[in-house]
Length: 72
Figure 1 (cartoon, one colour):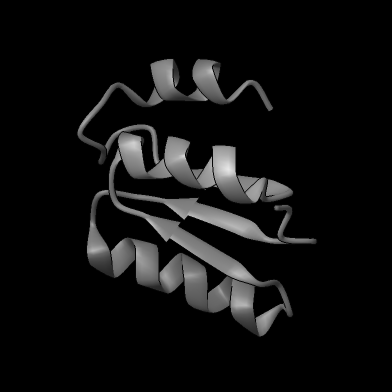
Figure 2 (tube, helix red, strand yellow):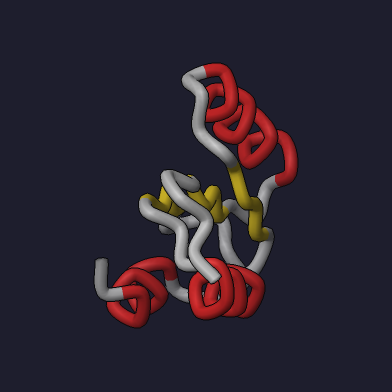
């Protein structure tokens, strides 16, 4: 299933993730949130968001490795 125009916010810090999600929602985008690399990959494979906002430093995995796996 695709979530049209959705933004996936990936950040291990809840406050930062919520802040980014709020801004995306205010801009009119549907928002998905993930706190871990595994959550992000699961959402990507099942919901296919159109954009990913990825914190490279505040995750349980290496952010650059995750970005390579996402291949956006």
